[in-house]
Length: 77
Image 1 (cartoon, rainbow, N blue to C red):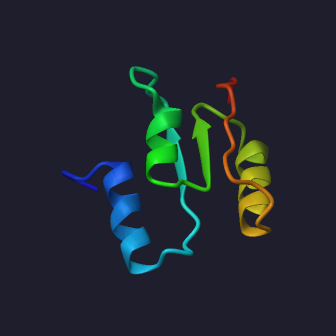
Image 2: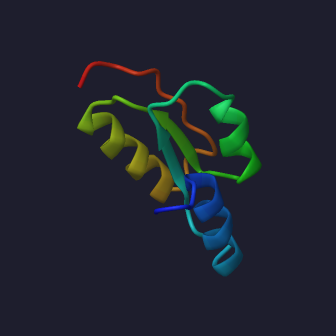
Image 3: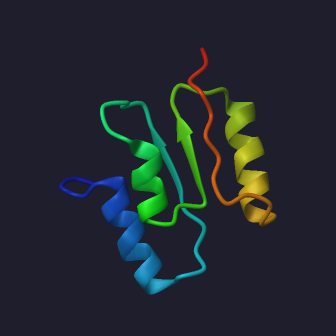
């Protein structure tokens, strides 16, 4: 993704397929990342680090259409 941010990529992908689920993940807490995720209509947002089980749970929820936004507090991996 050299030169492209996750939100920029999400916007581009959503232009190609508006129904595409997008999950943003970040370990950076310097900006209001929940607002960024909402601005690009992300299906979910996760903070790193997180356990693999939490990622799997999020993926299952998003693909089942059961969530609009997920926010996980960072936990030790």
